[in-house]
Amino acid sequence: MKTSYISAILFCLLFSILSVNAQISPDSSDLLILPFDANGIDPVYVSTAESILNVELTKSGRSIVPRDRTHEILDSSECYTAECALMIGKKAGVSEVTGCRLAALGEKIIVQYFLVEISSGKTLIMDQLAAENLEDLEPVMKRIASNIIEKRSSDKNAMVGNIVKQETNEPLRRSSRKNIGVSFGYLFPQYGYNNDDRSFTINLHLDYELEDFATGLLAGARDGFAMNIYGEYLFSRTDFCPFAGASFGFHWVSHSSVETYDYVTHTYSDKKKGDGFELGLKTGMRVLHTYNFQILFNLEYILTFNDFNDKAIVFTIGIL
Image (cartoon, rainbow, N blue to C red; front, top):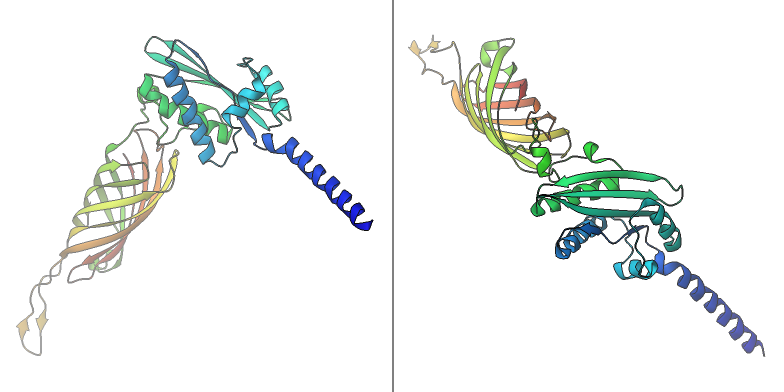
């Protein structure tokens, strides 16, 4: 008899758990992406754009409602407004809903999008971006994904890798890859350099920038003449980009000492050489990094392998 009661209790508990899971599991995701609305654009491109947005948001860690579940919730109805999205979000049990509309305007594609917070009923984002052509849709969708993740408008969320072609046409284009610039400052000797206090230095930079790295050639007048190649790791893709790296090259250091007289052997020693290979460790900041007009702050420790064993700290400010 007791066994029958225990079995009945266990069955009721199991049924309750399954019922709760059935109510929660289908909509355990926290973000629902509405099917894209499009006007004058091939459905293949619309589907690709929607897929890019889905992938970028999933990569960020967001839990997305599966597409078939979204269509099931919509039940063949259309939803392209924030007001409608709010109702769908409540029905789906998610925290946020986003929707996009693509419209052709000549060669351009205007992408309008919004993000609605279900708990407060607020529209967190209502914005638009313009793709210059179909190929430009990829960075546009990546930018929209970044905006949704950060809950920011497009103009505040530009970073290297999601700059759209329209922005590269502005006077301050956000498309820098090949840079040329100049920097100036002071060299502070730590050892050698004729025991000088400090000396003025000016450098020419030929710089090539990738998304996370920069490399280039530096020619500088720094108590002599230096020619170095350098590499830098860029810690950010935003406008304030700290970096760290190293340089290697050759430095012809200017020294006044030429020969020394040995009073024991009554002979002159060989002339010391001021030139030698140079190794540098550097860090600094690139400001306005997403534009093609960057302000450069650079701090470097350099060691020259010459007869004087010259060592110095170099601080410069410049423009790329």
